[in-house]
Length: 236
Image (cartoon, rainbow, N blue to C red; front, side, top):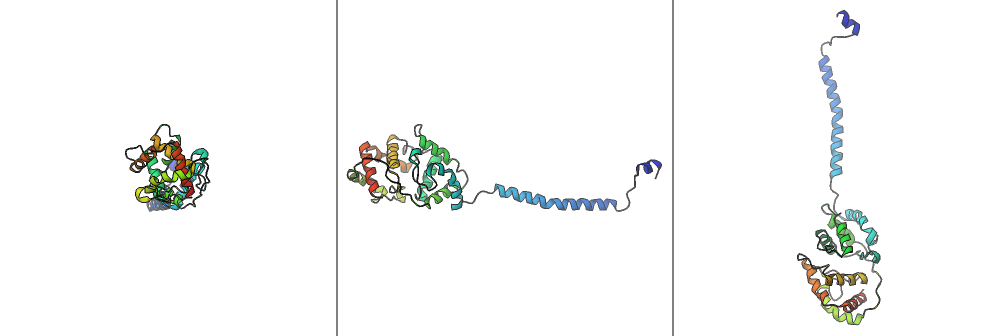
């Protein structure tokens, strides 16, 4: 060793120094591997889609609560109908129509437009089915009548046309995609008859089942609509 090396305390690596260094680097890498694996597993867990089902539907229903209520009983001031206990197939079908723009697609249907926008938040696979399943499992609320007037006796005769699809008891028929009418708010039933007549519902060329309802609404004037809704309330 020369003077310069002695002055700076330099040393010459001895035999095996390189092997020791390699072993030390291997130990560092071995400590890093589990960390990388854990990070990868954590990322996979974050990206995993929620499992469809009632639990998922209940979580998603939080976004429905402000309008339809925690119990699904609806809110007349917001024009939100009672939905608790509606058949799963019907809830899912209507959500699909809103998403596709077959409902809520006309300029003056402000409440339908609002619902269409809300339906777009159900954008993961199984979300529609999950919400529909949860809503169908809720206990029906049986809203109290809110409308005045209407001749139920006169409405009974008109209802015979409705009974062909919705049933004499007004409980609906899945085979013809006719929802139950009993248990629904009278103000909402009346509003939907007006929407069908105005072409806000059932006018889309691809809304096959909505199109079967519209001709029946076109035959009714305002008095006949009020009468048939009054009769439906007697079936509750």
